[in-house]
Image (cartoon, rainbow, N blue to C red; front, side, top):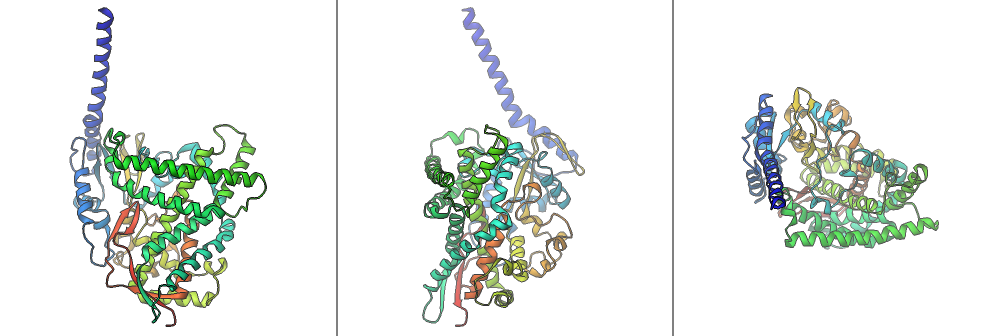
Length: 517
């Protein structure tokens, strides 16, 4: 009896502690943080238990995406409606509640610079296990593991290695042009949705450059990763409900199936490339071979233990990230570039004149691509108006001073490129207009040295593949301009929408015409 009574006391005591932790998480801690934020002049809605602003956030996002918008670049109210409403209502020094966690919205370039520079004070949020099914790798790691992976992966993206990959870019470009030429009618024109073609092009490039001779298998992996991204967006908001990820829903089961399939395929490819590397048969002209060789050198130099180099699971995750980041970023940059150049034919003509002056109808080379000033200005302006990621989130895991703000542990900071890139105070009265001329003297001059343009992030964790993506985009746009002129189809519906990255919700319907016809 005494033992039973003692056990009952322990259980009761445990339940009380658990209940207090729940109350603290759901109410006491958020209200304490809210008080601290308001004392510093930050404004936002009062905290509502568990959901915060999530219900309104989701409803506004759904309503905004229910129909196309008129063609303009004032896209913030469509792609980030709740954040825009909050800033309009409460000012730039404001916050929103993502469940019991407040997001402090930062639009001041100096504060953004500090956050993106101080990667130890402002780490990335812990990735929800459901979201990890899509990709982890370098983008989610912190501390020593991030430093080690970054060091090992760096050689894959240096300029000399990218030069080696140019013929692969060109091969994929040629395949795209051949497909489009095969669809032309007798008058040399055709109308099509270029979005799926550009997605397939970018996946073809990353498949060839990542896996070399195994690229056909790589393409199959890409299709699975694409489906995984779409499923991830469907579960994104619910993923923050405690315990929800354990429910055996149809989507959860399918996501786990895809993860298992992709991991098995990548494991097979990696082991084949390692055998080729060991036998001296690896070409070393693809990302995976370069990564495996760099990893081998790291292990040889620092010893083979769990804190050195990458294991097989690490390499699989980095390969998944190659796909997701490499394909997504370039395809959305190209599709919005084609849409905007269709809308602004004078800039399209200027870009084509530059391309033909530098290359004529010859195959583009690295030195020539580096000379394309107008093309580069256009790509920067597209990235400004239509950044691939509309928002970046960082954790505050301990009390920290940021400018005049004292941020308590438990908040997150939200850095919205789409808001900052469209800010008239930072970019002038024409901030919402397409004007590549603003980049005529480069990014530093255009931004006046401020962190007001960060489509690839900024600071130590700036996207490692940005040079890869920009070189691929310059090559693709050059080859397209050599062969086609293009304009918007009457069927085009302007509807920027976030599916991990900023994409055209209803595609990009464009009329292509063979140059010279």
